[in-house]
Image (cartoon, rainbow, N blue to C red):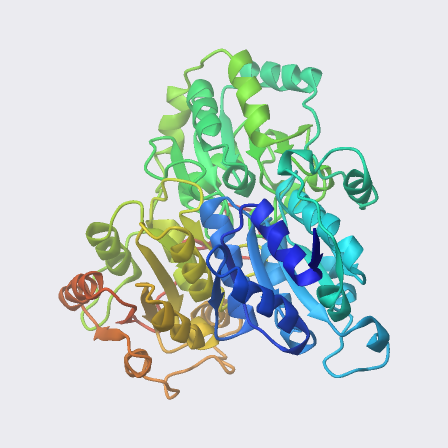
Length: 569
């Protein structure tokens, strides 16, 4: 049957079992939105307040559901407004297909209205990207994009469709998704791409080498990285940790890869890692990292990182091996498959003495109770006490982000949604919207700071319009808290452009302007009453939590310092 390019796009989305798209229309993508109107009974569209919010919502949907997120935008500023969201997804290996439409083929290269070379702009921050200049190329391109986004190490793929290709007609033949890797035109498209997108086969010799290292170790330490979460390898990882009887340090992106309440979990590792995690890293004789890229927030000083240990790196992406930290052994492969095979090969161990040493150090920061403000621990403890244990938590970036990973005990992959690699202030509310749309039966909350919330509070309009009952907790210290912390410790208290005390808005009044609820709170009693009201009201709610301006994230190790050189204990 002959269909327009816009209709073919809809059919291809249905092939991929896409039922939700986030986006914002404009001139060049109107053919697509016109087709979407006719498919609205099968494909639900969420109109956000800004394209960046749509990008983060598609990302949050992908992270929380394990599916591929989809985001639409028009050309020019519509497409460029996606770039922060694309880079966020890229750094955290989140599978999202971004689709924009550009000016028609006869207008390309003429500085036409809202024309931009978006594929050139996004090339460094996508797994792959495409320009579709004719309708005949469209179906195979969309199919390849989805296959690439979710295969191997997941990540964002960008498709820029010229407007003429959305209006032209061609024959469309449905193709089952299981054939999308097959030989033929689609397979050739994927092979021409710059990466090998499928996970490599596991080398048995490499596995046996690691098994021998494990059996020889007296003081092993595991690092649970984002690859465990993305690969949904949490069950295999837990079995592996229990079999080798190893303490487990968790990266920011690894939260939920092992239950934070598990007695083997030592908490976060790195710049704001717990004493237990960092001290264990410094004293272990075998460090096995699964799906962790050893970023500068984990391996702060690569030359002295785990200096007494043999370092083993398990990762799906060969490019990550020996990039930041030199390894003694590595295995390139899918974490789920690698761990499942290792679990068949290893002999259970007992490292009770080693664990006793590791857990002699603190796994959580203690706070003194405040008088006229709340402490981070009080806020997070109240949330944990009053909300369901499986609540999805989306954060922005800053002190509140670190406090959340330090004090919550995340149970499963996709429970924490946060921008780890790119550090995107403004990520959280869009991500929370996407998570709630994808998980309507779960409670979803948004944890933010007063600085970050100013960057995404426009998406309260989306919360109100679609009736998504997201609770936003603002850690309001009237400053850019993480930057102020660095200024206090490193810049001799020169607080250059970080104090927000005299700036609006009143966040509760803002919430009410959008037709939502809200409350100012400064003690536990007020906080718990506000949470109860928010849970009962059935719509979005903003809780503005007063905390001290000089409350700090502790522990802290300075950038480039040895992992046990704590600036703050």
